[in-house]
Length: 262
Image (cartoon, rainbow, N blue to C red):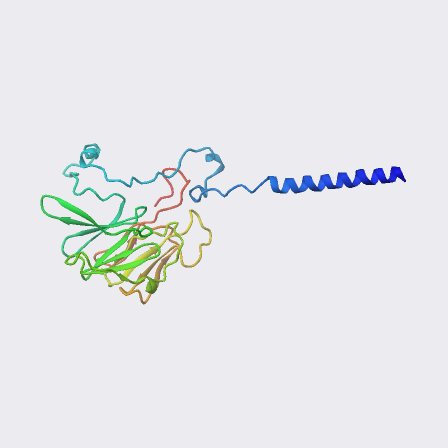
């Protein structure tokens, strides 16, 4: 009986030890953190690559420090600095009175550039928005579109202090940030065209509200989808005669320096 009890005790101790080891094994190996979004689609052959996104410079550069003399241009062309003091500029829109409005991404600002003849002055129209790259101008009003906000500044060129009209609710913006900054413009039909990029590098099936170009009436009503399967357009325009919409498409990463052809 004593031998039986000794064997039972040993077996129980071994069982407890095995159970404890299994529990430790389960808790000692946490899941590896997911790869950053910009690494999605990286092939195994490039696993040791040092390529990585470079953050944009978010401070102003003095004109004297901009090496425009290094820019190679065809005969008859000239490069010159027109305005400084607006870091992070992403897209521009021309106002009716000649002022230029510049949207940014990381800085969350929209600038106004006034041309005073011999010099240009820059002021911040709005700040602390989420990637307000999208700017457009129509009928005296500046339209600003961020990831989660749409603002309209009526008569801003004549009234710099005008309070914006918040139009966000009418546009029903999806919230993902990846490729969701905007390039916006009014088409020849008077509609506001807005892209919604794919929320990834190579989504196979992005949800229906992404990877498309839409158009709206200026007040945000009448939404229509005019193009799908568009990963990330960062510019578009209309043919002057046919009025066809032509747009760029920023293709996927990790396919080399020369592909995809976009």
